Image: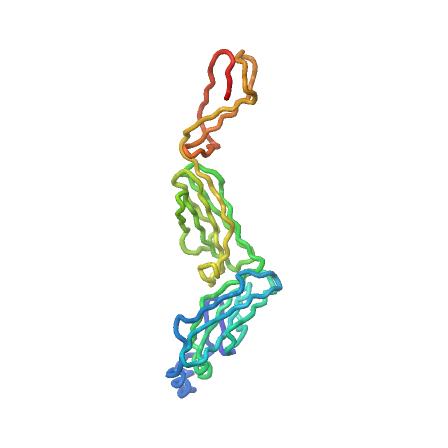
Length: 285
């Protein structure tokens, strides 16, 4: 194995490129003037972003190498955060990942022209962003309250299962359809937002490992949750257990009062008075 990865750091086993060039200067110069992989042309796709324990996922890479032959080196980060050289440089542009245990796996491919591989020009490799595979992983999110008054804060709490050193990001959709994010991925599993207007607020949480891409290929999404915010009281309705109540001053009757805002949302914590008055029979429609 000519190179190794540690979590977040790629380290060449050679002391420096200068030392290596002093050993084989002719090969290095030859590689520098020959075909190279076009920067930004390397792409990585996967047959799935999730798999069962004991399953497999197939990855495919493609790269532009005008006049040359691209070779691919495949790296895998295990659920424990350890990088391994899963498949050394070769013309094999596909790789099958086995998923023997639960957790999130990351796959990266380095691409060099065959002449660069022969020359050991490792620093010239074009590298893809890590692509994630989730095995028995899950993200859930819950709100501190399912209904609040507009202007009162709500705290979202996410929980990630089988995701290494999980980082979190939250998104909240306002009643007008606009989405707001919590900011960059963070170590804290909580996020607090304040509904500014009455209506329904939808929310979702994402979780990923630190090196995974900030997109659907690297992050896992929770189910969508809902918080309802109510506004000022606008309507009051009263319902009695029986349609007719004799106002004799003695017969008790239970009356249910419902308060709603202008959108028709029930206000569960209304603090006020509702008075019923009259003589003779009082009917409730």
